[in-house]
Each structure stands twice: as structure tokens, then as C-alpha cells.
Amino acid sequence: MKRALISGITGQDGAYLAELLLAKGYEVHGIKRRASSFNTERVDHLYQDPHETDQRFFLHYGDLTDASNLIRIIQQVQPDEIYNLGAQSHVQVSFEMPEYTADTDAIGTLRLLEAIRILGLERKTRFYQASTSELYGKVQQTPQSETTPFYPRSPYGVAKLYAYWIVVNYREAYGLYACNGILFNHESPRRGETFVTRKITRALSRIHLGLQDCLYLGNLDARRDWGHARDYVKAQWLMLQQDAPEDFVIATGVQHSVREFVTCAARELGVMLDWRGEGVDEHGVVTTVPADSAMRPGQHIAAIDPHYFRSAEVETLLGDPTKAKQQLGWQPETDFDALVSEMMQADLQLAQRDALVNRAGFHSPHHHE
Ligand code: NDP
Ligand code: GDR
Image 1: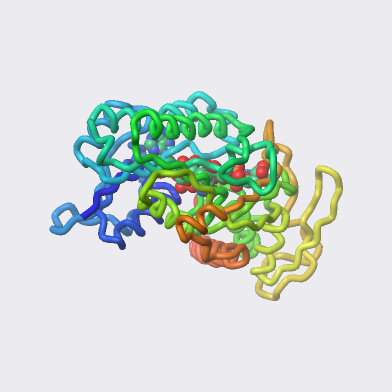
Image 2: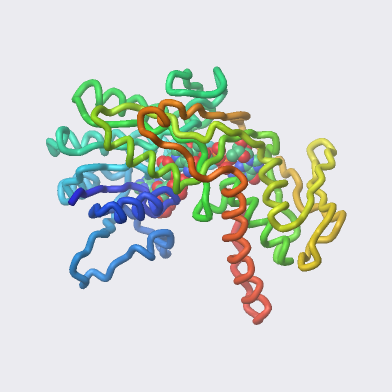
């Protein structure tokens, strides 16, 4: 039985990857952070009572900023594969917490690689690094492939640049089996609520049910190559099953704007949206609306709030996954429309639950942003 250790197991990708590896017969260990409230919601369905025999899913308290703890966990687990998915992963937040982002995303990666060396596991443990299309930042060529130069545009991107190169360096210097997956944006119903896709599907569902009035967004013209996280974790696993370690771009090769995402998500509700440009006050106005919706024709359900503009923006990203298709035999199974539809349906269910709770006289908690 193979043993895997996942940092960031409580995040979007961590949950899908844990499911995939358990289905493949792995013993799966994950690092979770100590928090004052529950933070394991995405993997709670995988939890096994510690008294059960045949246990294959384990969580360890830890943090990427804590080297001695990482060494101890790796020593105990003796993993065949480490997936470093843990990160302060929000680009906008990285402008507010640049040092913490560097500590976790850049030096955290170094700490894991050093732990492998310190424990003499260079020949046993394979390493996957969650690299990102944010490395391309201010893009130098389109579409972006494994050979496109990097130009990161945020403290997050710069931290991930260090992580990318330290992985390459440890592969070349110590012969580690270590790979960078340069993954373009990938989403799902499990996506964090403050990333733009999930923010949109969550807000539109709530507006539809009368729980909220308007969705405030930043740059509607940003363009992204959006895929489904379930498809992308398969590529992470495939990268560690090759004869030799290499870096791969994982993307769909199709690009949409934030505005198109909103329009497509609204269409899922039977709502037609018209964009009436008024400078920075650009609105999404409802034109037709089904009878069961709390929205009204003419209602502004989307508007720009400059608060969400970034200090330095990544305007456009489009990946070229040819190498992954040829060498890994990987390709995305979920297209843009199916992704938006799945996310809308899931958020509609959550909003229906909140509406029911409200009607029964209880008020659902208010979350910021
Ligand atoms: P999430 O933000 O959903 O998950 C991040 C995970 O990292 C969570 O489990 C979080 O714990 C954990 N984490 C945060 N800080 C620390 C720390 N200091 N020590 C240990 N763990 C920590 O991200 P995704 O699942 O979307 O992404 C996974 C990885 O892939 C990240 O590294 C991200 O930067 C990268 N990536 C993501 C892409 C995407 O489109 N989703 C694209 C390309 C790269 P907690 O739950 O407690 O917050
Ligand atoms: P990104 O994802 O920065 O690409 O990083 P995000 O969904 O946050 O932003 C995508 C684009 O949408 C624009 N945008 C908004 N973004 C947010 N969050 N909120 C808004 O209200 C809003 N309005 C417009 C942004 O300006 C941006 O251009 C994600 C993360 O998962 C990273 O960890 C990962 O490395 C990259 O994807 C690939």
C-alpha cells in the first residue's frame, strides 16, 4: 500500500486529491492547522473513527511555518509521495499579508524539501509542488506553456516563484523526484467563497432567493482559463507516476472573462443579464427573469466596487496543456458550461437551506466578502 502526505488537505484540492488517493488504495495522511473553530469540513466525510480497524485516513496537526513539526510528521509517516498543496492561496490577501504568504508558500516549500533531505528520504519520497499560472502574471506570450517566461504580479506569485525554482533546484542538486504542476485556475462547489467564481455562484443563488440584493465585483474584464478541480488533481497524481520528474502545465486551453462567468451563471437561473456600462459603476441589469425568482426586470444585481481592484492585476491567462496531454495522457473532462452549472446547482441548494432557516425564524450567519 502506498502512503501519501498532503499539506493543505482541508482545502479545495486537498479534499479532491484525498478522495482520489483513497479510491486508488493509498493510505492518506494530511496536515491540518490548529484553529479555534472547525476547519475540516471539506474532508469530514473521509474521517474514520480512530477505533475502526483498517484505517487509511489520518490527520496530523501541523503548519508549513513550523519546520520541526514537518520533520516529525514526515519521519512518522515515511510517505512515498508528498503533495504540497498548503498555501496562503488568495492573491488579493497576499498584498495585505506578504510576509506570511512568503513564509508559508515559499519557505514552507523549502522546509518540506529540507525535511526530506534531513530524513534521508531522497530516494523514497516523491514530491509534488502546487505551482500556478500566477507565475506568468504579466504574460509574455499567449498561450502559456512550460517554456513561457515568468513575470509574477503579486506577493503570492513571487512567493510561488521561489517555490517553483527551489523544487527545480532540489531535483537537479539532489536527484529528488520533484515536480511542479503549473495549474491554471480550477474551481468547484468546494472552492473558497472569496475566489471570484464561487463568490459569483454563491451571490447569484442568494439574490435569486431574496437573501441578498447585489453582487459587488472588481475587474470584470479579467480573463482566466477555468477548469474543474476534480480533473486537475488527477494530473497531480499522474505527475508523480512517471519514470522521470518533469514540470507540466495543466489547463483547459479555453478562456473566459469574469463578466462572461457572471452572465453564464445567471443563465443557469433562467435570468438574462445585460451589461450597461457606466464607467466604474458598470451594472449587470436583469432583463428577463423566471417567475420563481426574487429578482425583478431592471434590477441591478451586479456592480463594480473598486475595493476589489488589485494593486497589480493579472489581466489574462490562457494555458497550453499539450505536454500534459501527450506525456501524461491527461485531459480535462469538465468544460466551462458544465463547471458553472455544477457550481450554481450546489450553491442554489445551500441558499435554499439558508432561506428555509430564515423562514423558520432563524437568521443564517453573515459572512464578510
Ligand atoms: P485552498 O486555499 O482551498 O487551500 C489551501 C490549504 O492550505 C488549506 O488546507 C489551508 O488550511 C492550508 N494552509 C494555509 N496556510 C497554511 C500553513 N501556514 N500551513 C499549513 N497549511 C496551510 O487552495 P486550493 O485547494 O484551491 O489550492 C491548492 C494549492 O494549489 C495552493 O497551494 C494554491 O496556491 C495552488 N493553486 C491553486 C489553484 C486554483 O485555481 N485553485 C491554481 C494553481 C495553484 P485551512 O483550511 O486551515 O485554511
Ligand atoms: P486568482 O483567482 O487571483 O486568479 O487566483 P480569483 O478568483 O481570486 O480572481 C480571478 C480574477 O477575478 C478578478 N476579480 C475578482 N476576484 C475576486 N477574488 N473577487 C472579486 O470580487 C473579483 N472581481 C474581479 C480578479 O481581479 C482576478 O483577475 C487563483 C487562486 O486560486 C490562486 O491560488 C491560484 O494560484 C490562481 O488562481 C491560479
